[in-house]
Length: 327
Length: 294
Image (cartoon, rainbow over all chains, first blue to last red; front, side, top):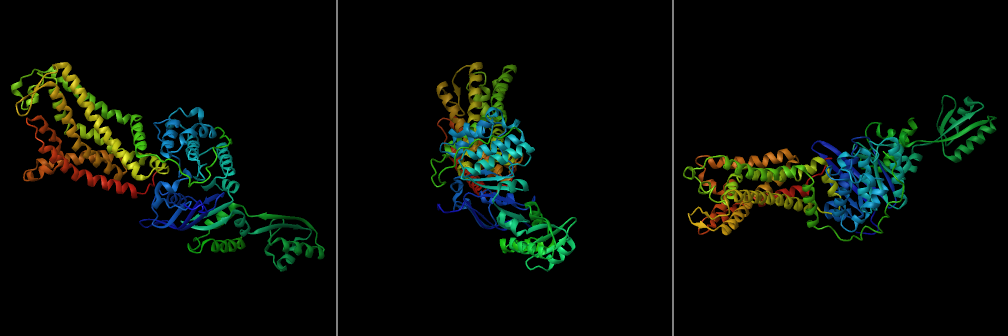
């Protein structure tokens, strides 16, 4: 195991079930300290990819490494420092919450058992730990799943839709918990289709659609690529639009309902404002407008065929730019 | 859901490369047994193993006995020595009940985890698949051993309490003292474990392959029944010595004087012909299978 090895490195992961190509040449790069969002609509191949990363299913093609070790070749050793759950966390319903954790601690070895009280306290299940898991609510099982993951003192936490099925308060609490764990230096790979959750928690994302990665990189870059837009309101919008449309560096200028919408970088916006002043047009409001993750997500996943699998992120960004221009 | 505390979790380890003591297969095995202890299904089989000898003894108290009407030498001695009871119980239970009890757990041991989705839970901890498979197989075998000896113990206690701790007459017609007969009773049960543990291996294989508890249990019992039927088909007599179900009576040699070891040694290698491929196939399937459920 290399100390420099990234928490997750997947190369060319493919999973085929007979005629169905569930995952199509996925590359992932999760760096140390990332809170990495793994986004995609239902059926996009997120869970299948996570299962391959954890060694639960064999890739048809490609490799996945956790801290430099491939679970398919190195077995449980590759999971050292790795914890989490895929789909809903599952436990033995006939055992109590504590017994379930004792079992998992025994399967972790080391001193995992000594941390049971701490992790139960962290997820606020201490009082219910003596009850059988069969009687737990969905939210309690999700929290027990987090507790089971924390037993391993993970450096990489892989969470698959951790907020699914939780009520709004539970979702908020789950986000607070994940943020807290990330703040402690735990790398988080968070699979989700809850866009606000990803936007709030993640700094880097991969977006998958129909088994392919259509974007991988920093969330901020994605939003920039989605178009740095501005809303402009002036004393004479008709003339202002004509000037903006002719101004170099300003793109996609058009009239909106109450103002103008256009795209340009900061320098060009500065020059445009001077040009408007010289033309005697007063600027009443100039508001920057970054695309939301939700906008970008839908643009990438609802606009026809996915980008070529081998094209990777650059092709996706080009596509995103062209899509942004079409808005 | 109540609020999840934002209190600090246990800090992350310095580096994942510094891994300490790994769990042994023995640890996994112990937890498999603890899971058994916590499941009602476990007690169903053991309950049957206890109930049958009690029903048998009770029924013998209620009927008129004529030793000369009995085909089996131990049936003829049923009221003369309590030690005839465990021998007869083994004779009766070995063809269906004990294989059924063994199949109940062996067929369920992997498939139930698959159905509950807990296989993925344990396979993402620090144990290898081979350890999990070994632990489950040994635990299922342990259960079969317990069922056999529990039934034997209950039959012995109930028989001795009813008809005394007395000598018995063996298949060869020689009288065997009570202490030696007791020893032979438990040795006979031990010999029966050779084919029974083979049934367990088949059950574990089916449990791994089918991923369905009911199918695996029924399939295991079905295989033993089919083999028993094959043994009855005229013209296939030459196969009988190689059928698993024919090895169920391997222990009869212990109750002869002198001891006839031939059926026991024969059963060892015949059972190995069934058990080893089943175990190897189950192991390979378990190692390579996709854990996609749950």
